[in-house]
Amino acid sequence: MNKASPVHADMHQFEVKDTQLQIGGYSLDQLASMLDKQVFYAYDQTVVKAQIDIFHRHIPASIKLHYAIKANPYMPLINAMRPWVEGFDVASQKEMLMAIQSGMPNRDISFAGPAKQLPEIRAAIVAGITLHIESELEFERAVKLGQELDIKPIIAFRVNPAFELKASGMKMGGGPKQFGIDEERLFEILPTLDYSQFEFRGFHIFWGSQNLKQEAIIDAHNNTFALAQKLIDITPTPTVTVNLGGGMGIPYFPGEKRLDLAPIGENLKQLLKQYPQLAKLELIFELGRFLVAEAGIYASRITDIKVSRGHTYLMTNGGLHHHLSNSGNFGQVIRKNYPVAIGNKMGLAPEEAKVSAVGPLCTPLDTLADKMQLPKAELGDWLVIFQSGAYGPTASPQDFLGHPHVSEILV
Image 1 (cartoon, rainbow, N blue to C red):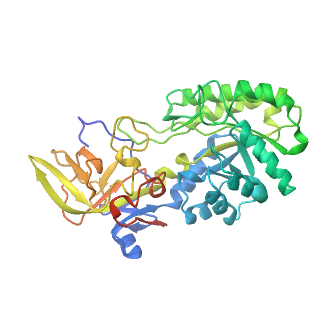
Image 2 (cartoon, one colour):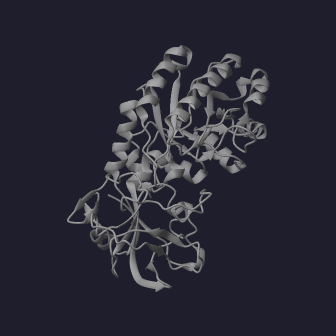
């Protein structure tokens, strides 16, 4: 980018050799040869581990880290992460099976998500994982299924707090929500339950995601600890665990800066002193995007270069059917560009004229980059989209218009 343009946060997580982007020590051409594919996702496990290390450097050691598999359920990635995190959070029966087959102990797996179906609840009870209950009827169903199976369901209540995460990419708490049980309703029902019918674990207080404002996250943590203490106080049986949610974001768009975990960690240390009863419990942070997004890239070949009324389009063999979130159709209100580069021309000066990159789908929504300054592109160059390690293939309509599915590789 030139100095007059807003820039993305620096993308320094990957090595560059002789203008060639390296993922896990391999060039894009080498990865393409290994996969025998010309469009793919590549994930660098050393970048994932580095992000986990950053978390542990700043967050109190007594707080456990769980990976939310929904961010990226690529099985080789899950297997690689299993020794690095202390649990997995899943959002479907399929994800539950993936977590179990990774070797993660079942008691360190939790299942959250609204509208769980009876087979999913039954499977979770049989597997002995923790069900994060999202409604009163879901609780009743879990207890009934447990009686039928002669297995006590392991239950934590997901709370819809009255507060919300300010400046959040996606608000998942505060006001009416499909997630969790409203905190005021829990205050009514928790003292009345028959705790002999299930194994009570604790609470899951989740309020939002993709936040880059440490002040907002600190405020949410303050509210979370206060709410958790109130819930514990009115629950007539011991609480074992509190899932403190996640919310930590990564930079995607021009002007965004990486989240500073240092003040967040310092505030958590003070909260552990302020709430000694909570400090004795199993406290958990559930993170997905924060751990894996920066470790992934999406690479496609430039197969045509077209000029239309003075504007240049880089035509590629990739598109929104592989990477819906990059197209702006996975939660963005106004489409903004992810960090983009010509992967075999790293470090070269951009041209003055802005170009757009598009895919092969018959829709104007199929835009990979809109009016960006890039080095002069040629046929066969690699168009690379950074920050692509989360919500990629499984969050995209890969069967849309019948184009081939995308490949993945962890290196």
